[in-house]
Image 1 (spheres, helix red, strand yellow):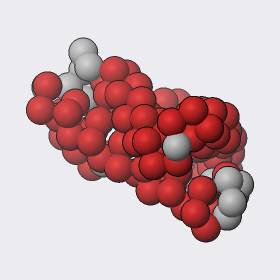
Image 2 (tube, rainbow, N blue to C red):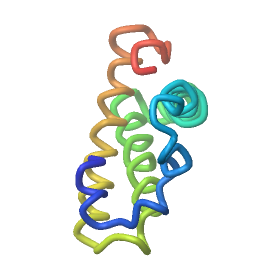
Image 3 (cartoon, one colour):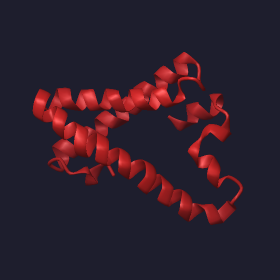
Image 4 (spheres, rainbow, N blue to C red):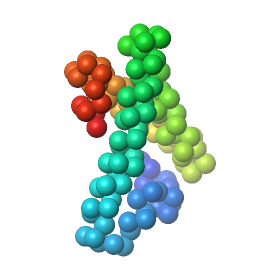
Length: 118
């Protein structure tokens, strides 16, 4: 998904830009940022909190679809003004697919634990 963004967006808009020009010294801070700030917080909210609530109310399949679409839409909304509509739609669909797969992994393979997709 990120490969499509780089064709359209100014690099200064991306969070990773704060590590630009630091060379090898940026590896550890960038990894920590990616794991803690982005990945872990998204997993805790979307798969750890939201999916569990939606699955209780609507069933596992529909709950997973709902959380994945919300996951995709939020990522698309962040880029709405920076990318053409078709690129935003592609970001939404690809991110929703990734969210669906991670939700499926959590529910089916690890009994609801977010460890499989973290």
